[in-house]
Image (cartoon, rainbow, N blue to C red; front, side):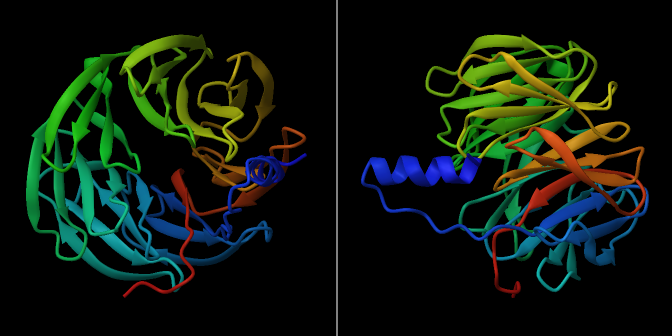
Length: 317
């Protein structure tokens, strides 16, 4: 049974309305080539790409089809119309832009200043700064929940900062492993998974109590983390080993280790498939979440490190 089928059956059993979620496309940011590529769901090929300049760190998707690519070496954020794969503008950024997240309404961007140890809130349309909050050293991954709470992986501070984005205030810090880099929220948002690159493990944070409830050893260098859409699986890329570790989310027991390309980093889930950016192989691995096997490897531009699933069907304005 696929992950999506599980969600539908659970919703029907509880008498809930079944959500209609349109899958894909998947957008891949290639740091070396300075390109953004679009992969359509089920096509296993790049259908469009656009040049945005070398040095992309991370990509995030807004609800309106716009994509935001951070450029730490160029003090800016590129805004791309995803459906049309065209560059709209570059927003200036007062620092070294790295991790980023988009508010639920698409109006605000939250960007980690790698060198400045802070998160900056700015207008997604104009880039105007309207809030700043100090966090730990080298803020890497950012993720925002549906209520507007922002989580920040402070890589050199061994912690996750928790921000109230309405007030732009830090409300808590949670100590985790060594070198936290990537973050993944469970679909129910009751758990936050933290990939700790240097200690080779994943910290599991209860978002209600803001405390670590478990630490799972992965080995190597965990660089990316995502969950299946039904919340039953946690997927962690191991950069050093060239694999993806699959955990049972309930027991946190290892279910499978899946070989992918060299130096896998970013990972995203789209329906019954996971997509993995293989930095040194210039490719994206496609993993079937039913069989837990790699089913395709898609060539992309040089140096893919970050990817995201887009949901909007309309072109950005």
